[in-house]
Amino acid sequence: MEDGNDSDATVYDGDMETEEEDSEVAVVHETVASETEVVSHVGPQSSDTGSLKADCQSNENQAYEHKNTKDDLNASDDGDDGSLCPICMDFWTNAGSHRLISLRCGHLFGYSCITRWLQVSCSAGQRRCPQCNKKASPKDIRFLYARRVQALDTVEKEKLKLQVESLQQEKNRLVLELAQSKLNQELHLKEIWELKRKCEQLLSSQSQNAVRGREMSASQSSSQRNIRILHDRTIEVCKSGGCRVAAFSLWHKLLVVSQSSTNNLFSGFGIKKIDAVDLHPTQFLFLHPKPIRDMAFHHERNELLLTVSLDKCAKLVDITSNSVVHTYTTDSSLWSCCWDVNDPNVLFVGSQNGVVSQFDMRQTSNAVARHSVPGDTSPVTSLAAFPAKGNRTLSRGGFLACRLNSCCAYERNADNFSVQHLPLSGPFTSLCYDEHTDHILVSTRPNARVPNSCHILCQFGADGTSAVCCPVHTFMGSTTQKLLSRPCTVSVQGDTLVAAHIESSKIVAVWSVSSGQRLLSLPASEPIIDICPLNVDGILYLSALSEKSLRLYSVKHT
Image 1 (spheres, rainbow, N blue to C red):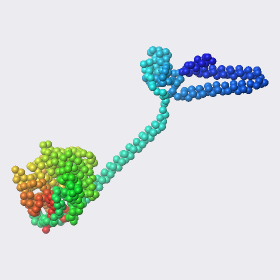
Image 2 (cartoon, rainbow, N blue to C red):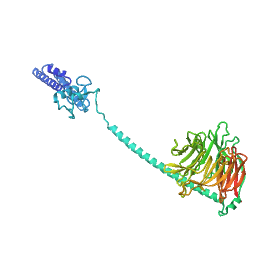
Image 3 (cartoon, rainbow, N blue to C red):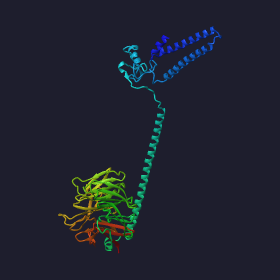
Image 4 (cartoon, rainbow, N blue to C red):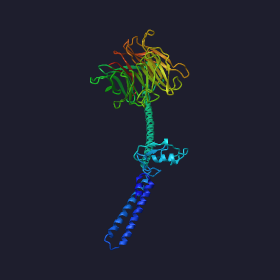
């Protein structure tokens, strides 16, 4: 039994502990056997025989239970690779000589076992890991500060990862389907806009045919004699003034006029709607805190109106719902605007510093491009887009920009625009383009070289010529000009008319393009700021806007 106690003192020697347990069991068996023999010699007559047998049997059962408990513990521990040293098959500790360490290869051992293995069991040149046989040395020993190391069951985790990947793939598929649906929707909207444009062209063609009549072959002189322009009515827009620009929608038969707000609680500027059929004002819509300088209806999406103001903002307004769809902000006051007739998503705004900003309705954050002329930072007073058309210069389409000191044409070139100067001399006040006749009307103010304001009607040059445009007529205007008044062109039966305000004479002069002569002089007691033609159900009107009122003239043939 002394040997058994000595073996119990060696706590971490697994083999000696097993031998000790076997010896204990053997001693117990011997004791039980000897006691049994003694009992048999004593015979059944002894009164202590039964109790002695019971005690012996109890001791034997306790010994077996003790051994089986240790065997079960060792068996469970043998299956736990995260708790036993693979050399001695005993538990490692977090302190002492058998503390947990790892080699460079990552395998775990007890410190005393691996030290003995590397220094005693292996020669100097053959020191290797006892598990993976990779080279190892005592300097590769790293102490690990962990009470217990176990392998985690990651089966469920891997299943969840597979489910996440499957859901991600499903999400990507749905995103792709959504993108395709949006693309199809955009294509359908484009088709709808194209159909609307065709309908508008048909309506415009019918109106022009009604105005021109059935006698399209009448002579120019006869047409001139038969044209009569009579004052129809005067509509008071705003008593306090503030009117600046007018725009007409053939699709909605609606005329909108900018004016100042009459509500003291909401000081600022907006637009007044005027029914072009009844010629009566209907509604006022507040839009900007500062004066509105220009407006333009969309050529396809007829409900959209573009307005620009000195408050550095351009706004898209839905005139059917009287709401602002979007607001674009720039770094300078805005003077002019127009839509790109070649791309329905693009719009241009001209600023006070001479920069033309290009915006795209599909990218609502910032301008997609900026166009300027080196050396000219004067305000952009007018913008007008022209379509792509063959057999003439600038056949790819683009836009015209009129600044106070220069007048340029920007032709579309792939994703950019190339600029060319118009062969005209300023200073300039306004510019407009007539898509039906392909005419450009440029106005200049009086200066030391030319004492009168001039209204120059130009035609795009023929294809292959170097000139961007060629002047057709120059109509002499006022000797003084304080306001930046905007003239216009009007298509009538067999002719094109040019109407412009002559400030020094207080009249609106009307010239014939076919003859180059002045046809009529319409009285204008107030300075006219903007002139806009209206064509409603075959009836042609000429509207002349002052700061407070709108004068309407009917154009008739007799």
